[in-house]
Image 1 (cartoon, rainbow, N blue to C red):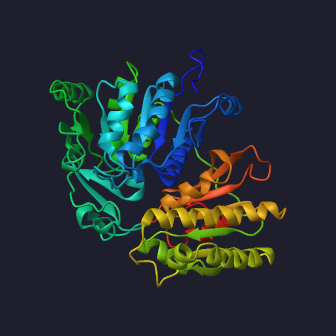
Image 2: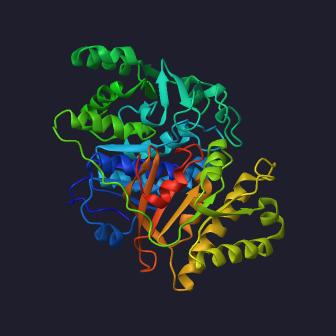
Image 3: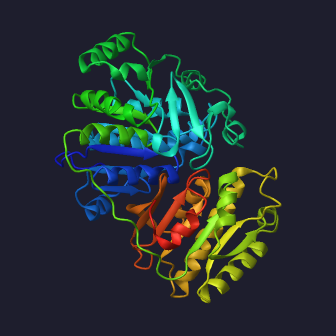
Amino acid sequence: MNPSTESTPPRLAWYGDDFTGATDTLATTAQAGLRSLLFLGVPSAQHLQQAGPLDAIGIAGAARAMDPAAMAEELEPVGRFFAALRAPVVHYKCCSTFDSAPHVGSIGEAIRLLNRHIGSAWVPIVGGQPNIGRYCCFSQLFAAAGAAGEVHRIDRHPTMRQHPVTPMAEADLRLHLQAQGLAGVLAVHYPSYGLSHEQQDEALRQLLSRHPEAVLMDISGPGDLPAVGRLIWRDAQRAPLLVVGPSGVVQALAAHWSSSTSQPHVLAPPAPAEGPVFAFAGSLSPQTAAQVVAARSYRKQPVDVRRLLDDGPDHADECVGAVMKDLASGQHVLLHTDSNTRHAELDARAVALATGELVARIVATRVTQGQPLRRIGIAGGDTSSLAVQKLGIWALGCQGVLAPGVTLSRARSDQASLEGLELMLKGGQMGPADVFERLLRGTSA
């Protein structure tokens, strides 16, 4: 579907390589005062019309979990849509830890696929997102272990160094991306942001004269954001620019834009939940395990992932029946991976499919019973993506922020029972220990 060439282009278009990260960018654009909507695929003309005027248009995808062939099938229509949209900045939103590999979720492959359509003169890659503890210094990536946790170099990070699909063994993002086919990655390091605008511009001009495939831009802290945003926006005004990185990309642009405004945009905190809340925790992250322990307001029910895969409908039926019983009595329910099987060597994709289908079935069953849920939460990127795709939702708006990196979204659906459904979709490492309690209270950090 191509948008009308007569329409006013939005300031920003973004593709999230997983749903949880895409909702973080949704919140970041909303916090920047942009009218934003995150579509769950290339939008139809009807849904674009229903959305109304937008300053930022996102597409939630799952490229992070795909091989190069699947990425091509996923990103080709996205590239065509973005090219017709004519937004000055096209943002490929990757995970803030840049976990990816040549064979799965390749950032290099994403750049090649999208830039065929965008024709970006150069490709900035923004390393770092300070509000969630992600920093890039002299091209080395560092990340906090959990909310406000100790900061580690990414190849020594307790979780990311042993990620089950894309373990991070290299901290220098230039070398990490080189392994994904981006041989000519140069870098802008954070001390240069202290130079005058004229000196920054000249340094970048000299760097680009070497024709790099991409330019990595450090973010060592919040103070670096305005300089990075200025350099990106300056060139995006001349021709569309493909920019890669976490939500730090939008934060940098917003920091530059806000330098000319006196009043920042403030999102109202989400209201408390209405009715029982259902949540699912399927992430392998120790941070999610701690959040399950801290979720004291929920009736907790374990799901045996091995049985779910081996027994199929039988164990799924047991889980659905138990959840329905507790929800019917007004209990909040947290379904979580059984601790005995959390670290078992299981096929990650098969687990995500099975748990995603289970979550979608629970939500759909409540609709069938005439008691649709009004708020749900899912911890786990792949499970979130697959579950939401099965629900019949076509877009998400930002309802509010529960914590840095944790967004409460509001569903748009052609089904009246799902219109307005509130969803927390979060990555395993995101959020404080009480994040599931915040899902109930609606209290932002």
